[in-house]
Image (cartoon, rainbow, N blue to C red; front, side, top):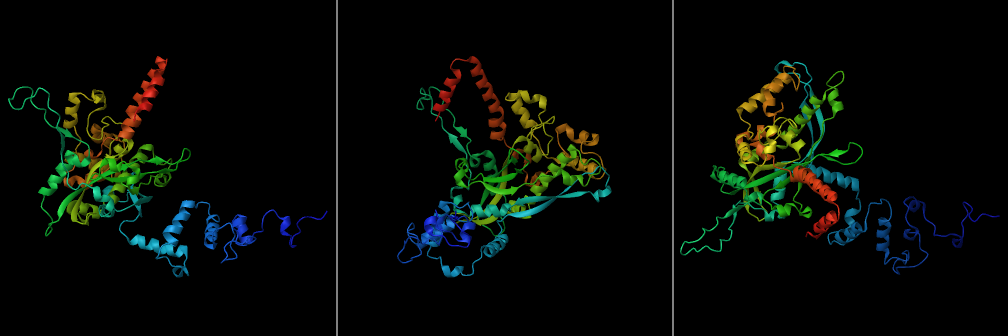
Length: 503
């Protein structure tokens, strides 16, 4: 029996199920109907090589490109290419005679690196205590940590405040009040009856808070910059960070740092499509294998690794709070805002929101120590009194401060560790710092903001998602559901009906 196909011998098209393809298109897995050699049926009369399945030869070439090569292209991207690029009046084929994607991308990257608001990668160096004395602090082992990717805070502020997206920013804070209706038996003419109710303060936005108003008034009362009569306004900075695992299996993780602006309404910031969230850094993590090079034997213990993580976090913030940012903190940034008016903008840090492990890392406190709160020194055994009047008084009286004694204790504990060779959790260090659950790490916020009269411990506000919604409320909610299940009958069904009926 003669085979239906003999190599090197052409076969009639009637014996083939599909038209033949050229070797190049076979490699790219182009469907037969898209092959430029498929000319069995005429299409465009002006171009005899066009298949009649296409409107014209241009459409055929576009679809051939679409369905070849990478499988990550989409129909929406193809429509964008056609309507926003190819049909643009400024688009010219003559400009692409010597076009090379790699060359042009390299040129673009080189130009972007010259712009102020661009991503940079910095090596952060931390000192690692090796348990050996180093008189005078000389020859203390240092470990470089790679992978800090960040943007300049001043460049981000300039970019956002000059962008049309900042049109709804509030430059001047205010105090908002609600006048409650008077009792029905009040007669203002004869003075009889119950007195009218006083207005009630409304706290809803950062730009209506007392902290923002006090900061604004202090700025207006301060001496202006020489020969400058521009309006002085505050740029309210609100930071968030959250270390996130990227996979259920493995150790792939990401530690982003976000920046929001308190001059913007929380209803705008809460919309994912508003673009109000600005990524400013991706924080690296300490590699225990790298630290082991400095140590001999079994390597650093858990206390040393924890200390290195604290050191890294605050060295990262020293990079972010650079000289340009601190100069702007003192003298402001002259920016043409979105409304076309030149203003002198003064950055002010108001809040830092994070879960509890990160919060104690930033506040340089011991995790779940005898005084666990980042804002006050209330002992752990007094926590059950939360909500009582004496608890409110205690929070004010025992609020954390970074006074001279705090700085003295931290400095001397670090001197004993790095120069004297004592352990991170040695008896000397514990005797000095454990009375308020501090740790021997120099706080970057204290170093940078003390001269401005800001109490850095007030930065660390409540994180509703981690500390309430995924913490207290979640536990209480699960307990309530279990109670309904134990009641039986249709209690849980009626609860579901009520939950679904909520708007």
